[in-house]
Amino acid sequence: VSFGPRPGDIERVKSMGVDAYIKSQLSPESIPEPPQLRKQLNNLETLELNPVELWKGYGPPQGKKKRQLSQQERKQAQKRTQIPRQQGLEARLIRAIASPQQLQEVMVDFWFNHFNVFDSKGLNRIWVSSFEQDAIRPHAFGHFRDLLGATAHHPAMLFYLDNHQNTAPGSPGARGRYKGLNENYARELMELHTLGVDGGYTQEDVITLARILTGWTTDREGKHGDSRGFYFHPKRHDYSDKVFLGRPIPGSGSLEGEQALDLLARHPSTAHYISYKLAQYFVADQPPAKLVDTLAQRFLKTDGDIRKVLETLFQSPEFWDTQYYNSKFKSPYHYIISAVRATGSKKPKWKTLSGIIRQLGMPIYGCPTPNGYKNTEKAWLSPDGMIRRVSFATALANGNFEQRQPKEKRKPVDAVQLRKTLANHFSDQTKEVIDTSPAKLRAALILGSPEMMYR
Image (cartoon, rainbow, N blue to C red; front, top):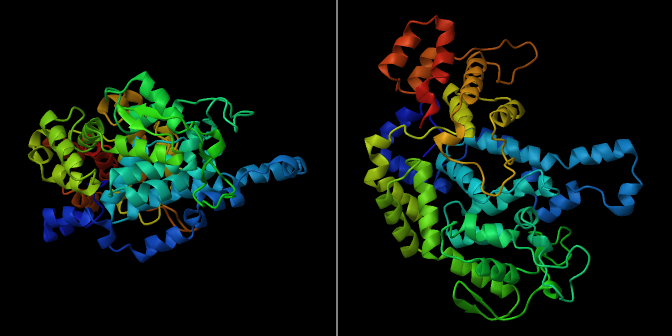
């Protein structure tokens, strides 16, 4: 339920009890945010901006204005468009490493990956952080329907999966680039976000959903009064009556899309698919079928209440079964975050850490495919990946990633404290290797140990 302990965390959990700790993590709003963390986040001004404000403040120059710029001014404008993404990356790392609301950060990682958008597709470089702040974070423990709706209306999703171009052929608004049906978002909405690839839908359902979502587009300048950057374009919509997943949906404009989202969010296939992914993330690459079924039933009974589904997961015998202890190989993101947390780092070099995660093949906001990063050992365990992790562990142990004043000396990680932080949870073989190695190598050996690679 966390990215791993910081110094003192294990003692705190023992003193309050595991059940009380999990209960508090399921209600992140009850956990105070450290003032220093809030101060760091407050310095990242783009986090508070909505999509329209981001476009107006950081969007690339257009048309006549662009043509009037010098080459140097164009470079500066291009550089400015990267600021929201860069600040979003820094905020993600700050929170994951320093926030006591750890389950919140774990779920943000889970849900962003589930509803993945790619930062390098056009305008998404200015919107990808907003997608996390406005669509993912507020709904990470809420009802799945609200989360689904927030992602469906966000311009980053509509732009990434091309629904901003989705237009009813022959409609009054069909012109230029917006002439025909685009099935991309409709297909991924069912295959990846809700029902799953074996969820019981047909190609006809994909086409019908695309027709339902015609006119769901972006309004980056907020001309129609929606600060989210969403706009339903009535002249580009298919108003004919439709049948979707066997249910009639009368032609009624934007309401059709909401009805379709209702059906998808509450479908038994969605309950099973989301439950499988949660069990795979928290328990095992091949999660027990009984656990998945239990979670799916809870999902349906609670109208997709994510918090209650997680409660059921954390109370299940499968979650506590010793056969699944440390069975999950950490993704590059999870490994880097857990290692930095274990050192008790106060002010790591955020940009450098982001670059290391990128080198390990998992750039934050940088997965180009809509299915997101895989969450299995097979996807991440490789000789090259392990060499890179050990190299990182060595540099981290030497204090290379901590911000310092110009004349301040580099401070290596204290191996004794590090071992205490991790409760000395190592195999006898690992302990022997650590104990028989020179003192200056021990922190690196701990951070690069087999036990640090699993959770």
